[in-house]
Each structure stands twice: as C-alpha cells, then as structure tokens.
Image (cartoon, rainbow, N blue to C red; front, side):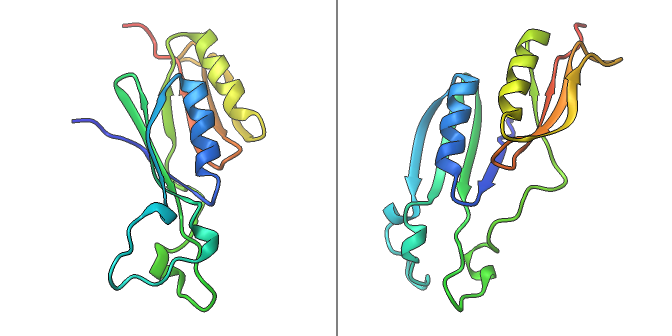
Length: 150
C-alpha cells in the first residue's frame, strides 16, 4: 500500500508542479487540462477561464508520487458546490518530506520557503538533525524532517 498526496490549487497547479519536479528531481508523467477533457453528459458548460486549468497532474519522484489539480471556478450564477466547492487553502494537514541528511533538508526547506511563509524555521531538534515547517508560495504546507538514524 502507498499513500499519495493529492494537492489542489487555484489556477497555478502547472507552475507548482513544474517547480516541484525540479526541486524533487521528478518527472511529470501526465498533465491534462479541463479543456482537454471530453464533454460529460449532464455537466454544466466549462467556463472559458477554466479550460487552461489543470484537471490532473502526476509527478513521479523515484518510487513516490505527488498528484494534483486546479479547482474549477464557479461560472457566474453557478453554485460553487457544483464545481467541487472552489479552491480552499489546505487546513489540518502537512505534506511531510523525509530528507536524507541536514544539508538536503536545508536545501528543500530553503527552496520551499522562497516566496512562502515560514511557520517553524529549519533547525536541529531533540528528535532530528533538522526539522522545519513552511507554507510554500502556492499555499501547500510542508514539513521537512531529517530522520534520526536507528
């Protein structure tokens, strides 16, 4: 069994995943927009502004994956619940990264914090050679941790 984080964005999913692919050394194996989807019976018409948004992206990073999409904006007069509720900033979760060592942890933390918000600076703790928490410039909350050797 494997758990795969699925991240949502408000129109900047393609930019975020291009950044994550470079940062984590992964490859985007699929990326498709809402405009590329075949029409679905019973679904409201797609607003022109939504056609370039990412419907689904899959980033493969060695044996791990990260997936995501943009949310659909509500069309004028449309109930946001009809389009998945619209974008909401992540709450109640963090995407946790286990870095190989403190230098790698610091590199990841520094890159994720550029243009973002540091919640807890990266530093040694009683449980780790390095740990920090940051919300990146795309709104995704990350914890960077260096596991203690067994």
